[in-house]
Image (cartoon, rainbow, N blue to C red; front, side, top):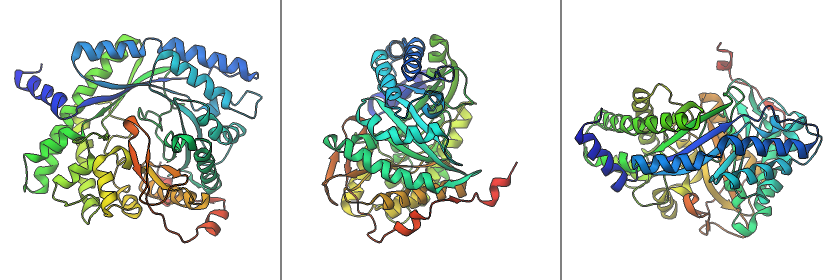
Length: 452
């Protein structure tokens, strides 16, 4: 039972510290929707998604109203489309992206994820078809999100896929240039992708998941930031304990919402992802948390250590509040979605190389980063390869969500809108990675892949 103090404390977190449920994501299996005729398969997918998720938004709004806890997004994830659609005799998978998009619109959700392929060890026919369809699919839909997993600790890195994705990202930017390359903001390249991630753009419903599941993403950078204000100058073990206790409170709220939503929607309760996901709002920034630990500006020396402490303490607090913590769970560092990160970039303190170092200890990777429009496909592929290597060696999820800003140069900005925010265009190294990327093949898995 919550006592009066805890109730007042939670209300203050919601009213003044940006505490919210970032998303309720319903995962839906499409494994039984295959058909040789692409039109029939697409119809089956649409029908199944709209049947399972018809009450998702309504239920989320009812819970939000009854409990007084903001639920910002209601989302859907589906079986990786390269798997679900592989039996269909068509080269262009845009038809399936359109079915997903139409289902999302019918259900009233904010995003639908799962236009995805898992190619860490090689390509199937369906994988190639889906990847080649990504630019057109994202240009012709509004709510569809796409992801491709190019590496894992067990399999190594598929460098042919890495090379291909550099070109796909460039093509996607070109096809969505009227919206500042918005398609690239809905496309993420993973290493060690997880099957129960509720956050976009990387959410998909893994093949090991049940028929239908509810995964909840909780976010509270503002709450952690305010908690640390009370321990100024304290030793780091006190800082860690403060973050841990705060993460416990945040996760407990997510657990309550997740169980209630799964019960009302007659879906299995999946996981609570307790990632600290920032927004462009002032006071809801991961960068400001790091600065509250004593850094003048996020990106200066000490930033990686501060982020490591934060990420670990968040996980420790979360696992004490729920036995079903999953997804990514930790701290996100998406540049365009974090006003503190944006300011640090404008100051010249936070650069791409420092962000890469930070990804060694954060939840995911290089996220929502804009680069000059003339950045080559091979440079983008090399950035992906670096991130995949970090994930592969460290047995963690890493990812790249990068936006070539066409006709923009370093110092310019692109506007994504909403939670996606504003991305300052950041410099990349001018030296070529062409010969490196053109080798192709596969970077072998590290020795720790033999653990069993």
